[in-house]
Image 1 (cartoon, one colour):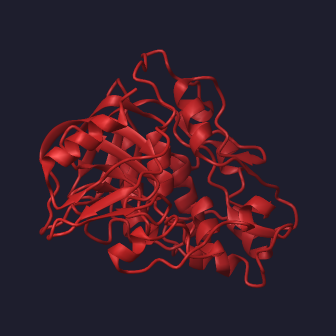
Image 2 (cartoon, rainbow, N blue to C red):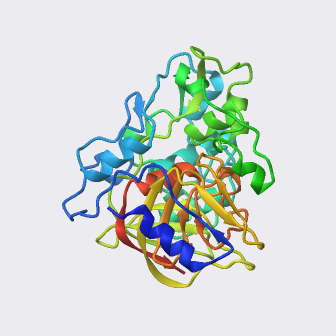
Image 3 (cartoon, rainbow, N blue to C red):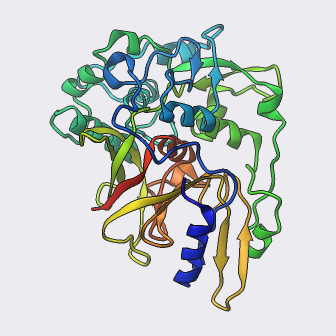
Length: 373
């Protein structure tokens, strides 16, 4: 396993104005990922039907073990669902029909379950949903279109067991869900460095991220909720992540999408991403994964040479994940603001939602190729 001190030393030597230093636990992955390290997946490589337990991938592979350490298991039911949730679960799109919030939620869900991430589920047709649809089309040899068509919908819904899986589900909040540390995140970097942790700013922010849903949509689904322990709320069912080892990723600046490939060069997942900006462009060429860290801290070096070490947490500038590249100071990382993924600039790195970054952290191989396109 790569040593943290190796990366820290490399970043210090780089002498750049902003540097990232990793701490906390290294993800439970191993450099010895063999070609046989795979988990058989139900339904031809799409998310297995979860049967009341989401984000609990099955199998004994290294990737499955790693994902189990990174992602929270979600136990849910379909009891006492609201009329709105029932309508979403039964939604079906027809050619020419408008994509309203009901069918939009179902579409986003199906794309997610086929491992083409849409960012926070909000039920609206938008940039990230279109990109996820196009990645799905590309992976399945379909015509790449600007709008949903019948061919794509039929491909998304051809597996009857998967389609029957509930999109919106009932979840009982536990003490652990609600008794979390929160904080007010200051704007000043030096003030951030004084915090114990870069925690969530509210309980609903934490819950929205746990269920991969927008905070506004979570509140809309639960208009009367007090979000207390023992209360049952309506949430999105994230299903299970990709468990196939990823040996190559391509960061496409034009589409603002990160494409993940297996050792056979098969496209197995995609994630909406922010890749650089005009002012701080991403590197070019091909690099490799050098280090993987769960819950990194972040060290900012100001123009006057003073340093501010920002503690770990979901609202850390690099979120919950740092996947460092052979190009010093550059990496793939999470984000404190999932709603802005692919809608804002980055400082040259590849930025993902925290949940996508965690899912990728669990399966990307040490030494994996990272290409900037």
